[in-house]
Image 1: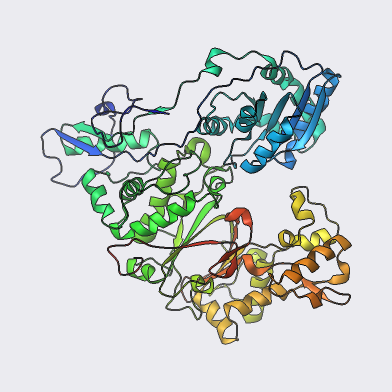
Image 2: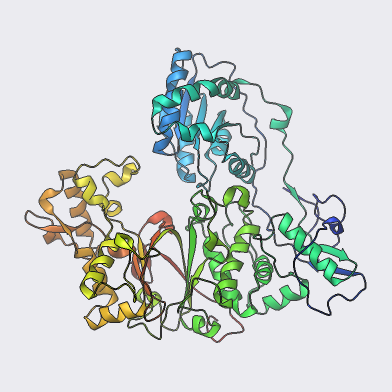
Length: 635
C-alpha cells in the first residue's frame, strides 16, 4: 500500500477530499456550548481514527485464464452445505456442456489453513470455482490463496455481499480476483431446491465461463494500490461553532462515526486520554482488526475512545477488549461483518469494575451509565475505524441496536451469593478482567407464555423456575441425542458427526437476577452444583448410542476432561450426559426483583474449542487488564 504522508504529519489532507476539509459543510443540529463561538476564524484539528490495513504481497492477477474448458479439470470448492443448491446444478451444466471436461465438487472452507490445503488439492486441476459467498462470515479469502497457488478461477457470491468480497480481496492483496454476483432476489425466491436453481445457473452460465476463459486485462494485472491519507484533519470555520459543525458533518458523511455525533479527538484530548495507560502510543496490538485487517495502535484506540466520550480511566478496559477482538484466536470477523448482525457481550470483572462505576444493576445493558456506554461505544468505534467497517453492507440484515454501545456490564457483586464468574474461571479476586463473546440471540426478553424466563415479577415458584432455567440452558435438541436417534443435520461439520466432544458441546450464557441466585444458594446450589444439575437433568442410556459414538464417548471418558462422564458410565445400563457444561457461563446481575436472561453465544474463542484458562476448562475468552495508571486496580 502507498501512504501519502506519515501519520504524524498534520500538514496534508485526505487524498479523496475534493478540496480542503472546509468544503465539508452542511447544517448541523449539534449545539456548541456558549462561548465557543468566538466570532473569529477557527481551525479545529483532530487525529485520524482510521488504522492502516495490513495488506501484504499486493498484486494483480497473473495466471493466464483457460483458452477453453474442453478437456480441462475444474474443481468447485463450496463454503457451506447450503451452497449445493446452486453449485450442484452448475457442476451438472458444466459436465453437460463440456463432456470432455472433469468437474469435481469438493468441500472447501473459509479457514486459512484449510484454504492452503485446498490449494494442495488444486494442484490436480486446471481451474477453480469458489462459492457461494452469501454471508460475510469469513476472515480469509480462499480465492486469493487459490490464485496465488498458480491456478485461475473465480468467486461466486450474491450481489448483496460482493462489496464485502471486494474489500476482502483488497486487504488480502489481490483486489482484481474475478467475481460473479448472483441476484439475491432470485436466490431467495428459488427456495432450498436444486431444481429451482437450474434456470438461474443457466442465466449465469456464460458469465461464469467467460470469467474462466477471457484473457486478463491490463487493469486486472496491474491494479491501483490502496491509497489513503492518514494525516490529521483540519476543519476551518468562521468561528469554533462553524468548524465544529464541519467536523461533525465530515465524520458522519464519511463513515468515521456510528451515525451519531462524536467528541473531537483533538491532539490535546488524545494526549489526555493516553494518561490512562502506561503503554506507549505507538505500541502495535498483536493481530489485526477485522474485517479490514487494520493495524491497531494504542494511540488509535485512544482516538476512538475520545470520540466515544470515554474518560482516561476507562482506557485500559477498552484496550483489553480491543486486544481480544484483534486476537487471531477470537473469531471477530463473524461478529463484526456477518449478515446476522449479532451483539458483543462485554463483562468487566474484578475491582476495576467497582472503581470505574461499571453497572451490574438494573438497566446495565441500556442507557444512563457513562462507563458502560462509553466503553462499549469506544470498542465499536475502534472496530469501525480500525477494521474499516462499512455499515452499508456490514451492519447485518437489519442491524443491531446494541452495536452502538455493545452489551457491557459488571456482575452485581454486592447482591450475588457466589464468587464472581472470573474467579470461577481461575482468576484471583484481585484481578481485573474483561470477557467478550458474540451473542446470537437473547432468551428472556419476552415475558409471556412458553418463551418467558423467570423473573421477580413473573416467577412460577422455585421448582418451576429451576426447571425453566435448566431446560433453556440444556437446549431443546442436544446434538448428541439427535445423532444417536439418527436425525440428520446437514449443517453439522463432518468432524462433529463422530466427535462426541463437539456433539456434546453446549454454549449458553445465563445471567441470573440476584433474587433468583439467592433462592438457588439458599437451596444449596453453588454455581458448580447448578451446572451439574443442568448437565444431569437428562442423561442418555449408554445402550441407545450407536457403536461409533460409544467408541468416541468412551475415549472422552478415559481422557477425564469432561465433568460428569466417567468410564463406569460407558457400559450397558449406564447413562451419559448429552451436553458438556464447560460452555455454560453463569453470571449474576440486575436488580433483586429483576429478570433472568439466557444468551446464545457463537463460541468465538479458539473456533469453539475447549481451552485451559488458568487451569479451568472453558470456551470463553477472559483477559486480565493491565497498564492502568489512574486507578488502583488494573495496573
